Image 1 (cartoon, rainbow, N blue to C red):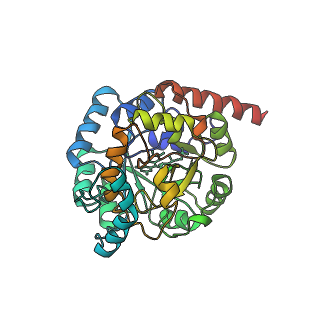
Image 2 (tube, rainbow, N blue to C red):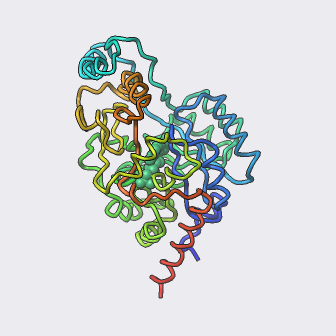
Image 3 (cartoon, rainbow, N blue to C red):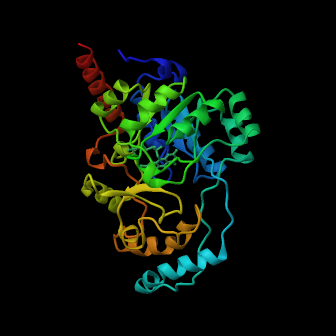
Length: 358
Ligand SMILES: Cc1cc2nc3c(=O)[nH]c(=O)nc-3n(C[C@H](O)[C@H](O)[C@H](O)COP(=O)(O)O)c2cc1C
């Protein structure tokens, strides 16, 4: 028996395991597999058009009768700044030359839009059971509309202050995102990367500070981590990195092998790839230009100039400029189908929890 059933009942799922939404790394296929395994499926929408998101939800609904979490970013959009862009191009110029590219070539704009009117209308149309937000929450009128269509709302907090703010603004549950986590830090009330707490310290402090259920995220990649999170007061876990090497994920073959070879100290938090702090396996540009630099344009604009470099390097099978978002537990990842993996996580966690309660 799970020590806390609040989120099983709130979401209508068999196991308190959430697939982390992972923009650029997955689509409906992974979501379907986790739903079939009894976890909560998520679909990251931050890099999707409304049409693409609609299509993906349609595929999910056709194949499985289970709840789905649609995930959105809530950053405040910043216009590109020509002066910062010029500095950034200068910083990357030698790489362009190395790959035979013109350092001043035009590049398409970066594609990560915050949750807005159009996406809110999509939520009203698609009626997901859960909506999750990263980087805070949307403005009140949009949030009210999401809640009015019956979706449960969850969002990430990286410090206790953010968790309290989220509870005050009406979320149904809080994702405590420890510093171990792969991908973007959900931080929205602090900019201090070095002060971001790890999950073992953060989770019980958030549990003590709020009344809503707390979902543990960051560095959890098997039944042991899941049981530990419950012991610290979590009501569910959210795992991302643990699912990246599943056959259903959409990462490229070179990225897959970079993850397979990554060591426990092989990831770092960087702002080089997008302009916002995120944890990933260390690649060449993170190592040589970062991992953190004031020269990177604001999110998401830093990623635009990296686009042609990423494409040119990947043609040669290299991941020098590729986002390899992954958390500190990357070595624990397994190449197993996600349905099987989800059931295995749940079974192992329950076995550990029953040992602990004896
Ligand atoms: C490849 C990757 C992409 C991610 N993209 C998103 C995203 O689009 N939205 C989001 O809320 N979180 C995103 N995250 C963060 C996860 O929600 C979660 O906090 C993290 O995966 C938990 O840590 P773990 O990777 O150690 O399991 C991403 C994480 C990874 C690894």
